Length: 212
Image 1 (cartoon, rainbow, N blue to C red):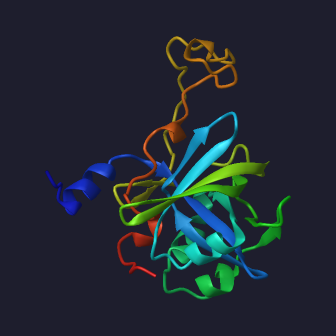
Image 2 (image 1 turned 90 degrees about the vertical axis):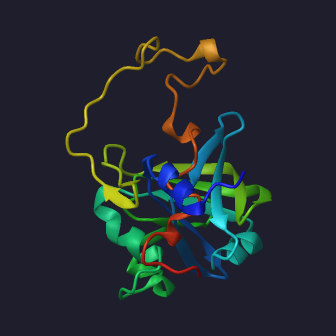
Image 3 (image 1 turned 45 degrees about the vertical axis):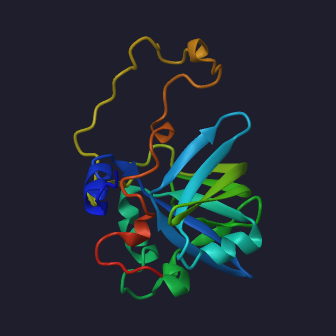
């Protein structure tokens, strides 16, 4: 049975995600694109995954370099999300949105002010449907703003944390490793272990955008 695309998109949109900018190098030029289809895959070895529509302009650069970085945005970096998703702004995506950046430990461009940046080597490229999954072996991590509020995406709109509160996970006291589930280093289930995003595509296909 085939599920109508609009119904699938509506259902997936109920799942809130963070927002990232995936960056890499095109020659010596930094390039980036907005992505919310991002997830952790494995702790040991450290692996993550991004899903990109095979038509996205950044795909050839990632395939040529064999590396990419995932930059997790704070809520005050919405303008970067819009710009790297292809919004008609100046400076535009071709000018790296005028964003401040610096080379990371592997030489990949990392965005200034991002909550965290994860530098990866492409370990596996998996074509599935109209997307490509790039499994990345994590080579370096940088946490710039550990207390920064994240930019969230839900039902095709941005979401900000204004009345948030925290609560312990039942059965997992704070700081106690999750040994019962065979994971000695992870005290809690991580949101990134869930499905990869609010949309089946990367966030570059959000309303008002056309495929690259």
